[in-house]
Every structure is written in C-alpha cells, then in structure tokens.
Length: 271
Image 1 (cartoon, rainbow, N blue to C red):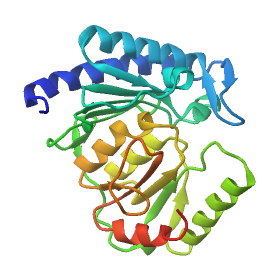
Image 2 (image 1 turned 45 degrees about the vertical axis):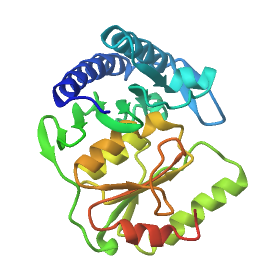
Image 3 (image 1 turned 60 degrees about the vertical axis):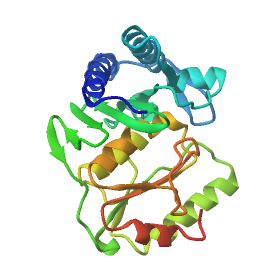
C-alpha cells in the first residue's frame, strides 16, 4: 500500500533538509582533530557519527512520529532491528568514517525511506564536495537538482569498476577479497575504491563508474538510499550471484545499463 506521490515529495523534502543539516556538522568538523573509537580492528566511529545520527533521528521522529528508524550507530549498540512493512527510515549518519578521519573527501550522509520493504525515497549528501543525490521511486534520479543517468558503456573492457575491501582482516577474507579483484582486473579498464558504499552507488548513478560490488558491508544503511538512486538513474542493483538484491544481506552488486551479466560472470566462483 505505498505512499501517494505528494506524500513522497514531502518525505523527500524533510530528508533533504535533514541531510543538509547533518552535513554541516560533518563539514564543520572535517579538518578538526577527531575523537576516534574502534568498533573493530579497522572499523571506526567518531563523535561526529554519533552527533549526526542523534540529529537525524530527532528531525525524523519529530516530522514522522509513526515511522520506524534504523541507524548504523544505534544498531552497532543494540543490533539491527528486523525490517517490517512499516515506513522505515534507514540512516547512515556518516558513510566513509575512515575517510572522514583522514580528511579524504568521500564522506556522506545517507537517508533512505523504505515502505512495505521497498526503497521509496533516497538522499545521499556529500557536504565536502557539495553534492546532493536524490530520488523518489518512479520519478528519476538527480544530482543537485539535475537529472542523472547511469552510463551506456557496453564493453566491460572499457568499464571502471569500484569495490571496497571491508573491515575484516582475517587471512581467509583478505585472500578471497584479493582473488575477486585479481580476476576482475583482467576484464575491466581500472579499479577504484572511494571508501563509501553509498558514494560508489551514486557514482554509478551519475555515470562516473560502470560496475560496483561489495561483500560484507555494514548493513542496510549503506545501500538503502544509494540503491534507489542508482535504479532511478537506469542502473541495476542485484546480489553478486545475479539473483535479486536483498538490502539486509550485506551483499551488493551494481552495474550500468548494459553490464549486469558481465559483472555476474566476472564474479562467478568468487562469491
């Protein structure tokens, strides 16, 4: 029973305002010394992550008191709630925390609304580059108000691939990660790792990248907004095996309009 278009527009407007406000916190702290905590060996969290999530939750609770909320930092403490059919905001208050700590400019706020378990509104805002990606289901994707489209690249040999190495450093994970990359490097033009799953998906949405996959990302907050933005830009989001994408699975693959099968074949035997 999804929401009416005019309701979705109001949801989008609140999400944009919220993302921009949180983005100002990120921007104002970007060049400052950070207070860093470790969630794992290389998985970081800062006071800015926590402050942004608190602000975003406060804005969304005030605007939509009946909606559910799932955020990265609260999930890290309490566990990720089960996704229901209720309207649910899925929030990464600062995707790219390691980038933020190192002052590498690929950081963003990611806010996605899922209705009946279907991504319906997506906002990704990078305050350092001042890039605002938005989408409402069925209405296209936009970067700073201008329509964006996935690339038309048809040859994987000319494709730019993005991936991320994740946060696990045990030998089995590192070896399997390296083997996947090694196999694909014989097929693609080149490889990029920007350090933000949400920014990778938006990079495909605006045609900067052609292919992307990540196994073992943090949770649905990394993909809820970016996956919708890419699909509204005409790209594809799917499981690395080629089957249907499940945002709760910690596995994602994505491609421009014509390269889904080529990426699935390149990952075959490695996922």
